[in-house]
Length: 151
Image 1 (cartoon, rainbow, N blue to C red):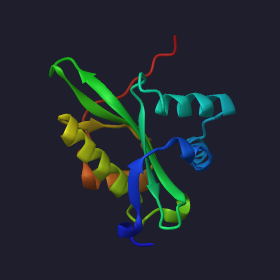
Image 2: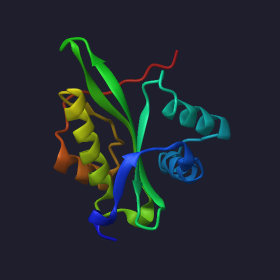
Image 3: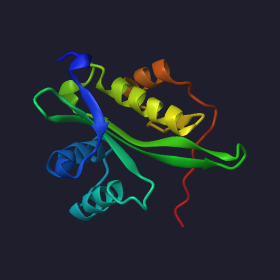
């Protein structure tokens, strides 16, 4: 499949059945347990206008969803504005290396420009070499270290 054959668009309510296995695949890739309740909650957020999480999907010519991206605004207090934050990016393993991830990121960059976001940030695992090759090509790794406190 050629990259130009892929359509990137907002996730729609009728995508639920096709979105679930993709998001479950994302969780499995990162060795995270994901329940139906978590899938339901995330899906609800994506369609709740009051919740900041939004989603894109990559659609193959046959209508199959082959990728997803979840993103949201992230307040930047020192800049006095919002930037973008990419929470989740996943491409069907059979479609990796075909440019789907790049197209999802490029589409999100278009959204960021339209919204006046000066940047988009995201995190990835240090050992995710395949994704990092793409990320190193489209963005700049920062010097920031991520911490997580579990209260």
